[in-house]
Amino acid sequence: MKILVSAKRVSDPNAKLAISSDGTWIEGDVEYVMNYFCENAIECALQLAEEHGDIETVALGIGESDETARFIRQGALARGIDRGILVSADEQTTDSDLIARIYARVAEREAPDLILIGKQAVDGDSNQVGQLLAEYLGWPQATFASKVELKDGEVVVTREVDGGLETLAVTLPAVVTADLRLNEPRFAPLAGIMKAKKKPLDELELDDLELGDAKPKVRIVKMSTPEGRKAGVLVKDVDDLVARLRAEARVL
Image: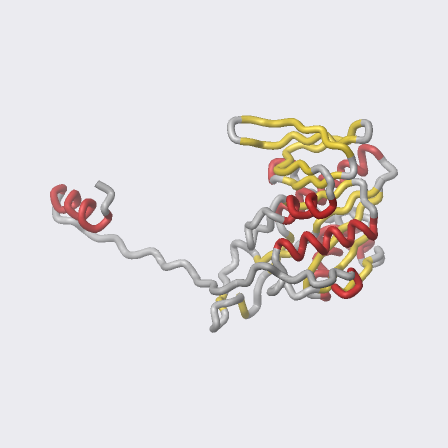
């Protein structure tokens, strides 16, 4: 059995980012981290491999060659994933649809039984790749997984929905997207970091995947930083406060 798992780097949500002068991208020394939901997907793949044995795990990262390769090795291979695949692409011009098509092409080459990806990337927050990928492959899907089990040729997924939990059993091959409550990702041990340097990492170009005329459908028009918090205002008395709430805040 083979599991293909996502390994996407994202800009650190806690870092202060600088917007480029044309407002279309971030610039400067950007701090990156492994996408949190991808860490859950990686941990899930490792747990399934440990539980069932005879499972090959493969991490897929898409982006700029050197940096993306580093995150695949440190974030996936060092934790225990068997090998990696890097697809070189310009992260500024890829959208969810193109990413899903890349995953679909890699899946056709690798023939995995299960694809585990983070439910969304914490930079774009689109939550689209898993659903698009399942459609392109014609595979069943289970999203927002909080529990994943393999049973008799099926993957049984407990997913969080409004008001409770829903359990689905889908036939393999299938696509499953991981939620944060799926597990607690492990840290990469020192031995794993050393071994990751020697694990195989295949590098592909977009042309290698024969995507045809597939192009991004979404273009970033403008980005901007949020407005700073305004200073508080002292009011004279209760009547003044009520008047301001009505006239200025318009909450009464």
